[in-house]
Image (cartoon, rainbow, N blue to C red; front, side, top):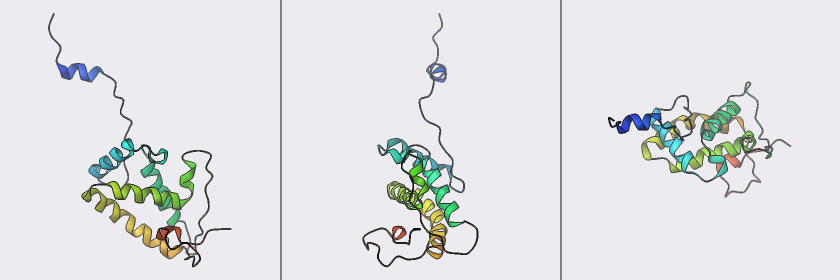
Length: 144
């Protein structure tokens, strides 16, 4: 009986790897680095695909129509994905991923976030009573 090649055997085995999500405007190398961070993370909000969702939520929030001020709203915490309805949590997640990326990927993601951060600062109002130790995106007024 002829011997089967290792490549043929591997091709028949099902892959256990979860699908990668591609982030629009980000290179495949950076998407791969983000995917590796998401796979290795033990934090529930860092599961595979959450970075793409967080970036999408953040972008949708800052690009909401009109020129009036935007107010931040608290999210419902019933499901893991609901936490990203609060744009501050989405920005927290993006910052966490940004800190863990290799230099080249971090630079690329930072370039993608910079115009969104500028819009966020322009469209939200500063809260003078916020804790100065909080990140800058958390020191903005909430909707009450």
